[in-house]
Each structure stands twice: as structure tokens, then as C-alpha cells.
Image (cartoon, rainbow over the protein chains, first blue to last red):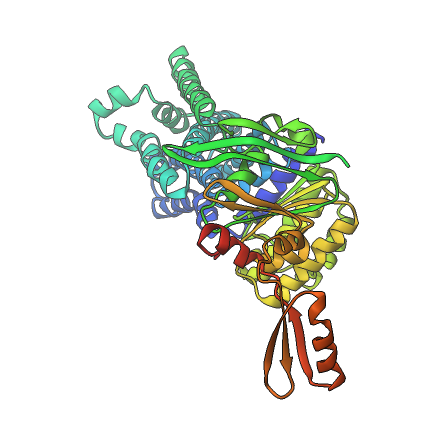
Length: 234
Length: 282
């Protein structure tokens, strides 16, 4: 069995499935839509527009992948489709690569719409996409950890929503409260938001890379521990 | 004839409850083996142990010579499963559900319509699963399970809750598969289904095999009444001993053209089960 064919088959299945899954599809478009609405409402003030666009872009690349990844995995467990896949010679890494890859690409594609909404200069495009990619990747790993840990969609949502709210909305709270900012700066969400807020002027310091890299490693270890304990299809 | 399935002295507990108590049976190649028992007897647990989903506490469980706990991807491609939970993608069509498995199993997409036609779902190929009836879903599950021509097929109550026409349709499919050499392991609490389809059966009650063998042999074994019943055209019911001494009397009724029906008194599997356990299969 060709691993690439298996990953591709699940990826294509996911595309077909998501187009009929209104609840999940909604998540991919809600924050770009809100960002566009805010930008239109504040068209007179470039600074405020940039601030809100950065907030919603951060939320999009944090909240959306956590929710969608965990939801997809949990639904497959609940409906028993994951069990059927595993018993059809699909290895856990095939499945996780497909789903993770799908969520990553779909988040990035819909997230790229912020580039169209905002007035980003040409030399801001690459840093924007790379920052969004890093955040999306971390969120996908966290979403996988939640999905692996959950038996069904209800229990997955019970974990994913708080996680998504904490990491996704913390940057917005941090911008209004110094105490929250002091603690929140150690989360990838706040760092990503800082970077997206001032792409041209942002200091790509070692602090940024250490915190973002550290968050990634923590969630990766968290996922591996849960995976070894629970396996993909408990 | 080689054993495709071996289940020896298997014991399984869930917490304090002993679900299987030293259960043993074998299934030879090309046979349909039926496991009968009421709900909660342990039928699904046996299938889960055989297919490696759940480990046994003790004993040996093998499929095609491989220990069930060591079933790998390669062996899964030789097994098909029709289990209690369908595992179909509800938002996808019949075609798309099978398309994905075709890609995973390396089967040509041109085979999808062939298998859909075989199970009578070609007209519904673009219908999403959430719009299918129960019978159609079950046929799609069977299509997925036999798509790759498995050597061994596990069916966990495949006709439970289905109408008679769909049940008959599925039985015909299974008989066709048997003619093709597929070995089948079937669990059911429908004794007519077991009697019709199975070469050998085992009766399971509270974790024990209480009887096993060919269905008609089991029925003959417990035929304690040994009677012949005649229903005459004049409405009388005559009961005679099932032996040579009754032959002249039976012949006389036929000579008089007075026989409406005649049948012997073999028990059904249900009555055998009730006799052995004091409870019914339902």
C-alpha cells in the first residue's frame, strides 16, 4: 500500500466532507469575515484597522485549527469511521498527516484572505504567512492532542473551546491589560499577535523564537504522551 | 481443510464480569460459521477478540494462522468486517465512501460501480449516506467489506432490524460469496438465518458454548419427540410415531387422498436453545 496514496485518499475525502459540514466550514470563514467587516467599518483609521486585523488573523490561526482538528478526529472516533480506517491498513501517522495537513492548508488558504483585506506591503507578505504558518502548526498539534484524548465530539469541544479561547483571545486581552500581557507573553498566541500587529517594525528576537518554539515543543510532547497512553483509536 | 479461524480456551473479563469462559471453536476454509446467542451472550466480544480490537485474558485466537493480537495491516487487507456500527461517512455519497477505500486498498475506481451494482446500490451511487434507508446502509457496509475480495468475512448481526426483502437479498449475497470461497463468521440471534446459511453453528449462552455442530444435526440430536404430524383435509390432526410401524397408516391416509400437510417433529434451534438454557434467543 502506498503511503502517499493513503494520505492523499484521506485528504481528498476530507475536502469532500468539509464542503458539506457547515459547522466546520463556518469556522474557516468567520474570523476573516469579521476582520473584513471591522476593516470596512474603520476604513478611516489605518492604525485601528491594522490592530483589529492582526487580532482576528491571530484568532483565525489559533482558534480555528484547534477547533477543526479536534472536531474532525473526535467525530471520526464517535462515528466509528476511524476504527474502520485503522482496520483498513491506515496507520495512525497516515491519518494524522492527512488531517493535520488538511487543516493546516485550509487555515492558511482562508487566512491568506487577511492579506487582501489589509494593506500589507509586499515585504510583509512572507513574514505574515510564516508567522501564521507557525501558529497554525502549533494549533494543529494541540487540536490533535485534544482529539486523541476525547471519545466523542462533545468531550472534544469541552476541551477545544476553552483552549481556543485562552490561546486565541488572550492576545486581545493582553493588549488592554498589562498583568495579562506579562503572563500571556509566554504563550504563542500573544507572540504571534505582536508579530502580526507590526510586521515591518517587529523585532524578530530570540525571545519570540524561544517562546513560539517552546510552545510547539510543549504541545508536541503533550500530544505524544496522550497518543502513547490512549492511541488514536482507543 | 485448513482452519481459517481458531479460537481456543478463550477467557475474557470486563471488570468483575466474566464474559467468555474457556470458549473454543474452529472455522474451516470456505465455511459459514454461525454464532448464536441472546443479547449479552458475548458474541460481539468474540468478534472483537478475533479481529484484534480487544485482547483476550487467556487462550489462543488466530486468523489464518496469525495471532489476533498481532494482526497487522497486511492481514487486515485479507479480512472484511460488517460490524455493529457502520462506520460510514454520513455526508459523503455511496460512491465517495467506497472511492476512499478503493484508493487506500489500491483497488481501481472502475470496480466501485461493479460492487455497487452487486449490492443493488448503483442507482444510489450519488446519494449521501444520511439519506439511505437502514437496509441500503447495510448493503453499503457489506460492499465496503467485500470490496477487496477478503478471504475471511466477519459479520456481526448483519440483518438485525432489516425487512425480509433486504434480509433475503443479503442472504443471497452471502451465499454467492461462499460459492466464491470466502470463509464467513456470522453472529446472529436469528435462528432461521443460522439454519439457512451456516455449515456449522455454536450456541453461546452466558459466555459458554453449550452446543455446536451442523444446524440440522443439532436439531436431530434433540429430537426427543420423534413424531410425524398429519393434517387431514377433513380437519383432523393425526400424530404417529416416526418409525416403520406407522408407514401403513400414513400410506392409507395418502391413498384416501386425505392428507393436507405432513411433517416431522424436529425442534428448531430456538427450541433447542430454550431446552438447554431455559431462555430464548431473542
